[in-house]
Amino acid sequence: MGESFSKKENRNKKAKAKENKAQKAQERKHNNNKGKSLEDMLAYVDENGNLSTVPPDNTRKAEIDAKDIRIGATPRPAEDPVKTGMVDFFNQSKGFGFISDDKSREKIFFHINDLTEPIKERDRVSFIQEKNAKGYYAMDIKKISSVNKPTR
Image (cartoon, rainbow, N blue to C red; front, side):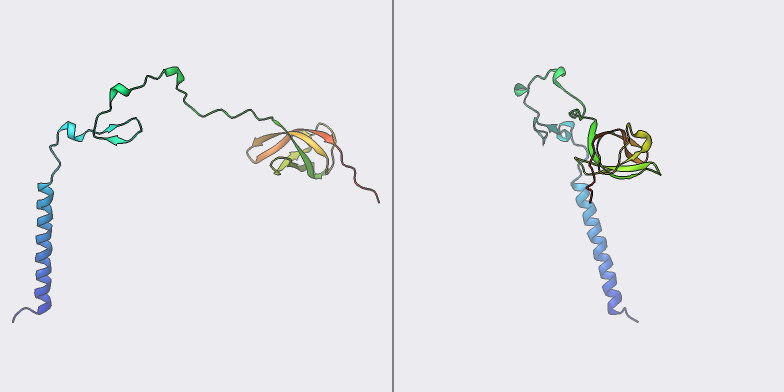
């Protein structure tokens, strides 16, 4: 009994794939980059930081004094540690409250132990913002001005 059409087709496909594989291996062997000289493998970096095959021109080399090189982050301008805000919420019986910072509009927690004088809600205060494991909190809180509630 003879081979069916699909068997012949599969055999021909396998033979073609084997032939292609052998041809690719032959091309890789022919175009092998092994054995290049050191000069062929070197790459140079020009004054702009680009890779180049040409060595840099030393005649245009600029001398830099080591004292002029600064390493590290640029220092931030000193920020005033004293901030101002308004007491948004204050629970006298529980001993805590929140101050709304004037600049960032952030609500900052404070504890009654950090007050230097008695305050109430809507008072303008100055404070120093600190950070602990739970987040930011206000300390050294001083009253700037008091807002009187309108009487009816």
